[in-house]
Length: 162
Ligand code: FES
Image (cartoon, rainbow, N blue to C red; front, side):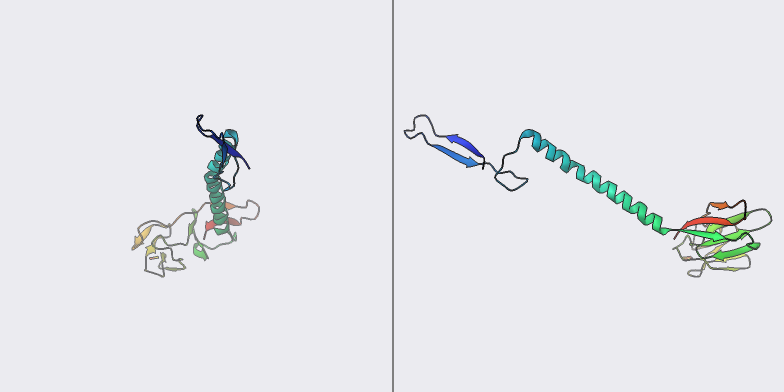
């Protein structure tokens, strides 16, 4: 046990030395730490929030990775509109567009078309074959997704956040 020495005044007859324990706040024990140790501990403690931020970012990245779904679309997808779960393929002579099937209003999955328009089953928003809003309540175009085409097979691969 470490102690501080407290001397009584010089004029006291009995020169008694009383010892007071010094309490280490961080450990709750009667232990004295050096200035260097103190700053080392403070340094380590100050790193904890950074570690928390790093773990949080890593966790978010893992969650996002788990939410990405890869969808393979066959090379012989027909002209017009086709539904592949979370994605919609709109193909004509000139181009192929791939959209997220998630409605931009409240996120319902669009899974049908009427008269060449994509129709949301939840609140009736309608989108053109190129993803633009024809009728609300949605007010944003469908999200156009990048895709890769296999040059050998013509198969399309698209990643979508589900
Ligand atoms: Fe599609 Fe509301 S979620 S119109």
